[in-house]
Length: 404
Image (cartoon, rainbow, N blue to C red; front, side, top):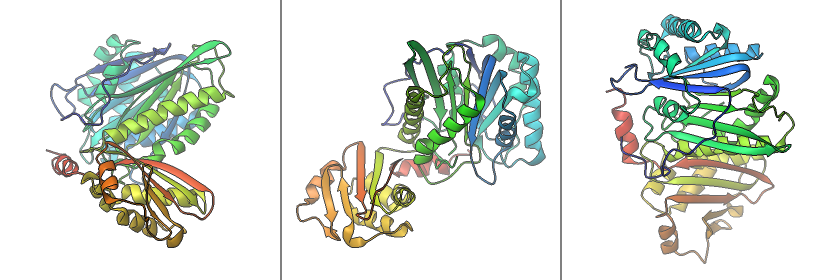
């Protein structure tokens, strides 16, 4: 897989989270010789929160995790994730595979079954060869390492071209609190909480209910504001574990919430930067809408439009396609009050092309890798920002051959 031109220089140096250990192996779930299974162990006293796809065809692992999250509580926990096969739309065989993997993880680690959370990502509709995973549990358990997070990030990749990680250390009451997260995602990305998996860890002290609430709020500000291709996966999963090892209670800390937001937004942006075939990273800002909800409708209509996305890929400053997307969004709009900008360039205003706009300036701007399209609706104070990428021949090539 060719590295995305929008990829960062390398995997970041993430803070080590006390009470969390990682391991990864090649189990041959779909491809031989490829690292494709990771195990995470969380120490005694940990709490786990999660946010999941709202797809009506969500996978057996998602359904199992949803049930377990509702139990709350604290204690040791484990995450087991495989790539190559999503264990989705596999009928009762999917439930059988989840049960077999959970039992094997419990046997190997001593973590109770109801504290074992599994995820699967990859091809839909094929039974998961779970025996290839369970036979590796002893190896995974013996390889657990507090510094193994990069290997875990690599194990969960499918069409990703690079491993994704982000971390922060924030000082609260004079003591450090650490956050580290990994993600996978490249295509089928339009989260509604696309094939997207995210795992975040912290040594903060926080109740399960508070963590669950915070995670849901921040997901709506980050992962639910990205789109690669408008398709929501059957397997989207975001799990977060807090070990409490720092001894710092962050339940009411704005600094912790901001640091977690920053990690989640970093990971969300990395997913977009690795969009299948992507060559442009695009921020869409909408202001002046009748409501925030209307602003979001407009932003997603622009970000999901194949006509807009292909124009961006062709470096064509076709502002007419932006107008089209605004009009189809379903949001309240007045043609004669719209203002459209490419970066700082005013392209259209007052229902017509701006008298100061020069096509060459727009064309030169579109050659950049990082772009910003702004639309002011001119109606009220509603605002939203979403992030997307362009749509290229590479996306077609990747998805035409996905199951081969």
